[in-house]
Amino acid sequence: MLAERLALSDALAEALAERLELTLAEAERLALSDALAEALAERLELTEAERLALSDALADAEVD
Image (cartoon, rainbow, N blue to C red; front, side, top):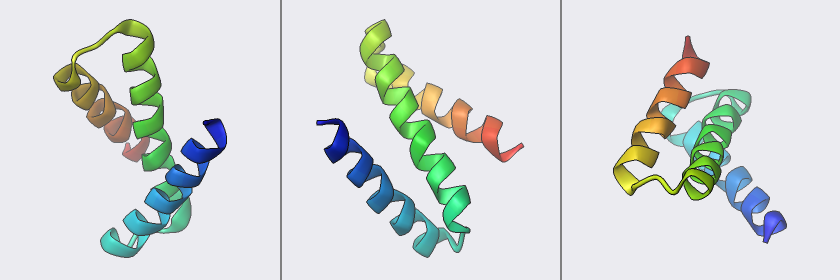
């Protein structure tokens, strides 16, 4: 399961890099933010809207 998530994160990072003309490192950080937000949402039993808000906040924090 974890290996599948990591592979998905890598694929997502590559797709983001291509679409948004980001460096791969920047895209990997964004994918990691989403994975972290999902994991936190599961642990904290957040709603989907709360998870999306958390994901956005994590991405904004990494861009700054």
